[in-house]
Length: 314
Ligand code: ADP
Ligand code: RBF
Ligand code: MG
Image 1 (cartoon, rainbow, N blue to C red):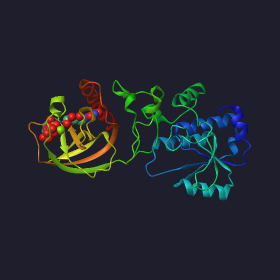
Image 2: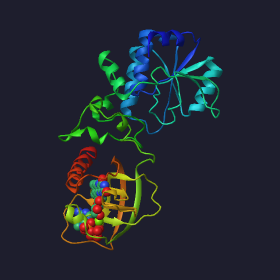
Image 3: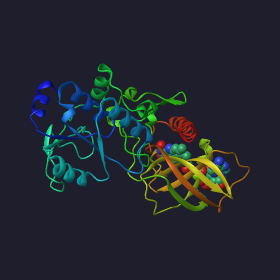
Image 4: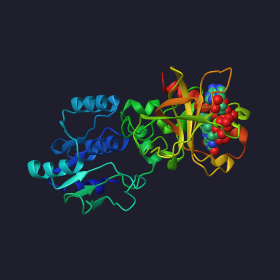
């Protein structure tokens, strides 16, 4: 991104700006303040019932500080139609980067896809890396949403976005800019929305969980719509509710190919409870399933998962 890019952008008569309060749109807003005509832009955001309160607060504070109005829509296509119709916009500024889903083919100026109302998407930071974004934020003292201080590296909404487990150290999350593996930016985001409730009977397995130090109640649930990974939540056993960590999928560390839900309850029990029913509510996501180089590393990571579950659920 250079000044000359903004010279091109400034030729557009009336621009919309998809300002969602995430780090990229905040950087584009800052570029607009420095090089563009921010007062003549039409700001909008596509909101949902699951928006983070921190994002709402952040957008409110920006709109107050810079005296801008941010229009709210519930659907992006509806938004484009309305902005074209009412405000005669000829393009939309966005904070997309190539590493975002469906964005690898985009350039700084790209028309909308055939399935969208026709306009030009303008992506000033399309070629920036995760590190580029944080370097800019730091160099320009840009104020970003508080969620980035709580371990989030990429933000969707409360049903599908969790802190990045790679930032969890010494029982707390580090600031987002300290996550230094660009490809792991979206590791806290999932495809299906939480919470999810699932019930099942505890079945017997190879009894390996207890050898690792983490007995897991195994539940067969073939129709669980959830991406494989490590989660936390509550489970009710014989009328009592317990905090639990769970793994869902194939235990690739042990070359297993059968998918299974395993629940490790964070409480000690005197005896087994095979045959009992567990009512499970999965409330949070921790990380993907991993094949480690050594089983000791799996054990260490499970200890860390438990700390994350306790930290995130209080
Ligand atoms: P399996 O391979 O049969 O699942 P595990 O070694 O994983 O064997 O042990 C799980 C069993 O241990 C559970 O089915 C349950 O009956 C019992 N158990 C005891 N304490 C716990 C706990 N804290 N969390 C889950 N299961 C536990
Ligand atoms: N299995 C894996 O193959 N990879 C993992 O990263 C992994 N993480 C787990 C994290 C937690 C919190 C729990 C409870 C289990 C995890 N498992 C994982 C499943 C583990 O392999 C399984 O519980 C044992 O093999 C006993 O069945
Ligand atoms: Mg088990």
